[in-house]
Length: 460
Image 1: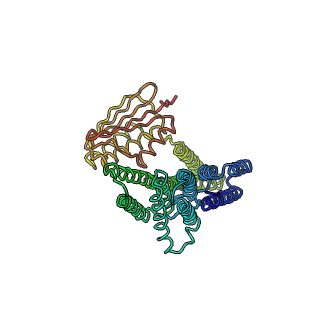
Image 2: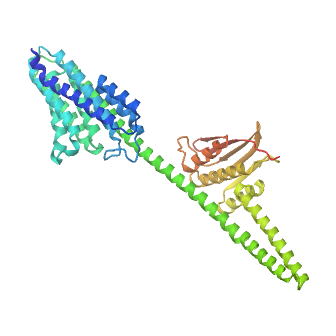
């Protein structure tokens, strides 16, 4: 064998190395999310180490791209993830091809195998690079052609390396094509491997150990199924994570908008309250003062009445201003015990949920802590009725190690595999923002328990 015999695999491989270097060096140079130092670091890294460096660059910098401007596939997966996986598969194909050609150097069909490996490698690259520009017919037929070629290579070579080449090509199809379409190509590859094994058994020229042959077939099929299932599940998980990231991003944006809207609504409410009450009182006070001034010389008694009315109006205005300031500082909360009992009575009378309250006397809870605890109680009551199907709820509030501990338990259906919804997550964030702790526990048919621990805040 001469060097020319290896050209069908050497030329595409070398061209691919240079091609990927050029593409991702250019990609890195035009990446506005990297500073100059990082750009040159990645450029030198890719120039020296080629495919591994390009894959690392794609995976490492994908989070720096704004999600709004991130290029994605039809299934919502980031393009950089798909390209990074593809480069890893190309590396695997090249390494396995080199192992095949070194193992089968004296093989009768060695030249044909090298030619098939080179053509399959070219098709692998074309199917990825020109995927968006291919006509629909090629979209459908290209994976079938690739699968037939690599299974034929496995037929000629009949080694673990040729089987792995088949798996690499199937993995590239799963990576490149939508999940629904890739199922067809997975089944097609499995059938071809079965046919390949059957032909080998039929054309065997010497007696074959049936047990060994059947065992080998089972091993090949098992490796195929496990590898494909793992790769298919990986892509499915990536799609799920992408959907969850988008949902969390949208939820965060909506939460910020709602929070801003709440602040604006509260400011408007307080502004309207000051305008409607204080503005009216000050206006009448000003009119009374003007009238009293005009009557001072002629009718001093009536003038004094006007001044007294003005003084009353100003005092009322000061009272209204103090109330508005208290509303802003959230210090106008009623007695905590009274609010809690009113809430429990209202829920019991409207829903029938029996609520047992045990609370230490004389607990000095700051207003902002009162608000967080009341909102947590409301959320737990709602969840007990809506999800837990509870009929009774126990509420314990006590002092524990200079902290206020609140435990809420119901007799609902419970369950260990529960997922925190929006309400419970908001509750947890509020408690933790005040330096507290929030824990959840559920057991099947034993109800659901929420434990909240808040540092004690006392008024002087």
